[in-house]
Length: 339
Ligand code: SF4
Image 1 (cartoon, helix red, strand yellow):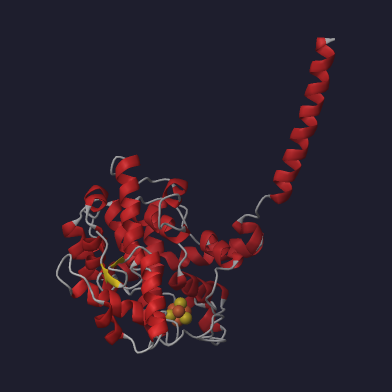
Image 2 (cartoon, helix red, strand yellow):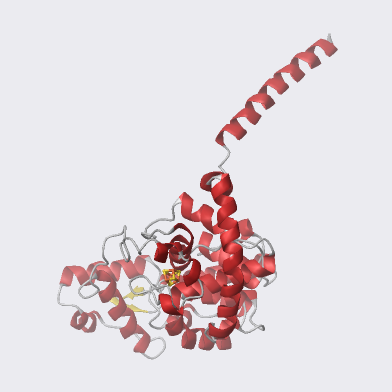
């Protein structure tokens, strides 16, 4: 009787497992090779192999001398650079990164810093919420990981302010792991050089993601150099509107040049909103005025009114800064940097 029950249970379990296997296979994501197509993937791999040496030589002679590329930079330093350079050109990041790392060389140091000092040190890098998220990340790394940035993708992704790009960049640049790093510059170079089409911006397409994996060198060490070199090429040679093809190490094999550069500079995204007059600009003015004040001093509302003619817009911006935790409201309407 008991055996009979066991048998029924086993049968049911096999049926459940069979359903599970079926659904797992059914819903499994296609691999990069499947997305690109097997024969196309082989062609792309070969093409990437011949591009690799030219690109490595170019990188050895042309990489900009940026402080975080120094061998002594810690994974934490790489993360700080990656967060600072989101939406901000790397050349602008250099003085901020140098000062930041001198003041807070590791996660534990940043974790204990005053919020107001952190916001001040972020200066004019823009999007200052990133500074607060970086400090939250530091607090978590210091508390949970004994001040060492984890080298696991899922653990990185679970930290505040770290998304797919930043996690991949840290794994590749700081830990030398084989992972495709996919940012706007890399998408543009790979799409042009190997597919012969313009990358239109917006969200990364499955084909762009698959391409980045298919052409990535198999050896982890080579893959990290490849990621950095392709990204650098996109930043200084294969630029969006006026690529300097005559200086490009990929020119001889570039599919985009061969195709006559169809759609050069086309974008899927709408042109950027003008900065002047936007809430972003007003928020920036308020933050700048607060950063310029001596520590602990308050910006009075009547002084903030001089920063923006539109009273409704000013109030909206003050409210949103308060909501983001970037300011504290005192006396009902004056403001200061958070303690
Ligand atoms: S040859 Fe021109 S378009 Fe092609 S990858 Fe180089 S810079 Fe970009």
